[in-house]
Length: 180
Image 1: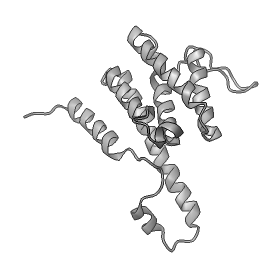
Image 2: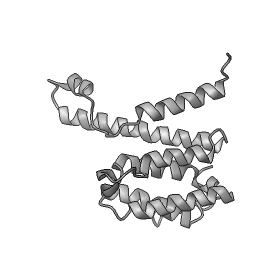
Image 3: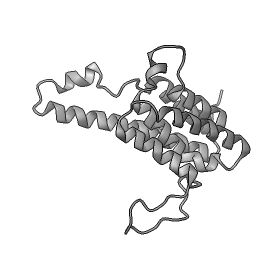
Image 4: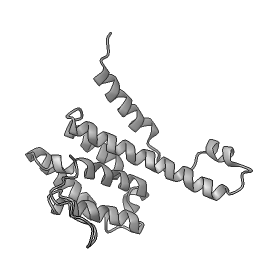
């Protein structure tokens, strides 16, 4: 039974998402054990957490890029978003909202492909759902950086995915689309 590269790649992405998406960015027991006895443990711990989060956000950008290549369907994107930021049941996660790193993943994913999604009727409907969820999440007590990321995505969509110059005096980037 021959599996082509495309199918093997999609299977690997799905496996990575299903089995390696951390519920927390905290260090595992194995990672903590490897740090015991080191000087400056907290700095190393912070660096490891930052590395884990960076890897996770890079994975979301990869998923966005794979979608842009028309290798993932919008149905799969919806399932990913549901896993990240749509609460299941009546538990504490529903009241508190998803973990901050899931919200950041959601923002990264939407930022990477939102402009393309907005070009089709089905994609626009999906983006309307995502925007609605962002507007719900932004009301929850998240860290200022996470709130800023959500605001940035909402602004990008309002600006038709054209990146504006972040500060006066910087060269304009008008016309540059986020997902191209």
